[in-house]
View 1 (cartoon, rainbow, N blue to C red):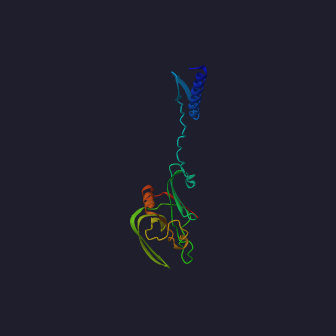
View 2 (spheres, helix red, strand yellow):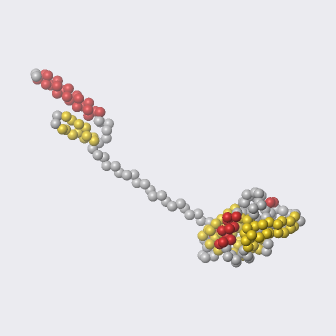
View 3 (cartoon, rainbow, N blue to C red):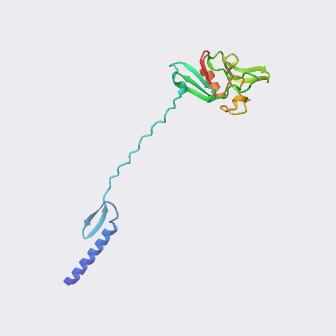
Length: 203
């Protein structure tokens, strides 16, 4: 082979080698390993650092402002007429809360507004009938749970009520002064509340 042919062969081999390097140039972290007369592109292992994942934080525990200031170890039931809501507190811990229906305060010919102030649970009775009458008629209602706190006013379920608890309709279609609760909530209160438990009704 003449020197001219040798130079041409070497140039051709170099061009092929450059083409090979160019194909792998876009692959990250490659090195050239030479084995005999052939040049091969060999990938270099890349250390993968795992992306740190933040540990999930526990959900915030809701704090009821209604329970603030209740002494430790003291059970207290709070009702807001304006909010149509009840909170049952064991110290600063909220046991349960619920929408309620209070007395029909807008009626002018009877006094059905729920009394405001601090009272105490007088009695606890299961499966009884609440009966009475006024100028608008009579009632004879069976309830599963009855917990009076002021004369004829108390907490009880109201299966006959047709509008939602918490509704502003209470002013004309509410109770005769009692506080209506859902059946599951009054059942919980009945089991949790001893006679003598304080009840605060706020306007």
